[in-house]
Picture (cartoon, rainbow, N blue to C red):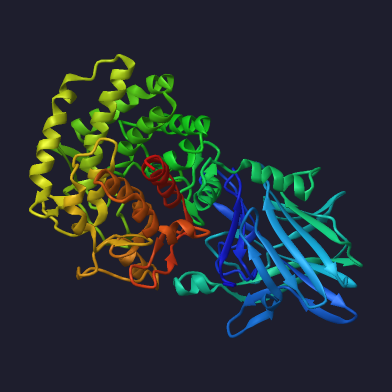
Length: 601
């Protein structure tokens, strides 16, 4: 068992509970009650830990585990015999004479975390629960301070608060006030990342449960009173998960777990530190919303972003709604609308947003300080406007000023998509745009195809072997249809976990995503493996006549993983890195399976 494996349950607010299998917090982002506090998706760790101690005739058994500077203490993980991610995180502790099953769930709509204990065998004389509180932004840490954390008894709960932040724990047993600080918790993942990694936590008091019953349930929540049981909350949580009909159990699991990214009217890019990013949301929409037939939510997402279009541009992220510095998000919006129509046939929605789609195309034709049309192709004026946008300080690690290959593939796809949708509406596609379409195809072939190579960027020409040109083969309206002739070109990038962002022989290649932010960002798009690129690769391969069974078998390890991260190290053994779960990683695996692998069996 990997005791450092992470688990997470989240709800439609963007709040969550998460830790490691051993309940040792490895990151500042871990916590039992982590609440989203406003529309910018800042989250606060209110309750960091809730740990258990059992008393057997004077013998104390702690189920807790923590990393400190020089020691792991206590070692509750030694009692942990089994862990299951699904349907909710479930932990089986065995002390020898006593078995404790601990389950954690979050209400899908409300900020309510519920922990359930089932005790069999010899009953402890007393069970004590210790809540360690933080009341901090999840990016940071706290030290012992003079802050006044208040504890108030209510009718059904104890309320803990600091300034305008608060949460409650339901009454269980007897609460005894402590007012103590626990010192020097160490978060090893953040330590390895060179970020905040050591803090103190406050114990306002603890709960003592004498002669505990066979089953105990604890509610941690913001508002109340609560009337649901653990099983009712679990049923609601499980029912909220997406489902699909397929005999492939692994894919069914991916679809269920992809629901974790759904928030009201949007899709979170990844946990822990992302909110909704427009590019990620549009790429993720088919796999996370359309294939599970969550059409009303897909419609709501599209309309929400449609309302944010300004001067023909979609913002980069809703957490920074004034940031429009992206050359592709608006083109991905058109992709999302086209895919939505493909699945739903909803012409009313298309009619509503069509002015916005035409406005996006006009913005590219007219140009702005971000990009313009040069010889019918999109010329990007700034170095950090594509999805490969890692930057630390003044260093931009993948500057792609010029004509990036995937931007121009998206440009052609957007023109053809809007032309198609206008046809469905019986609306005339503007003549000035109509004349551009064949020219884009012609100029793309002239500019980007150089012998057996495909340029990553043209003008100035960049021969870097990267996966971006896959989109020219895989989008609904592809510019290239001979993927089989270029299969060897991508060979160096392909791994069972996704595609490398740069071939290993390149002098800029960085094979491990580790160290401080500068070193991590240097690897982010210069060698790290991205699982989401499996989607375009499968689509392009299938269109090129690849064997479906061999494709599915090759990526079987990825499809079989209990959680799909943002990236993997480019070098073996390809350790998972970045966000522990990433929306488009799930979405593109799901989309490619249903659109390219399953339907053609």
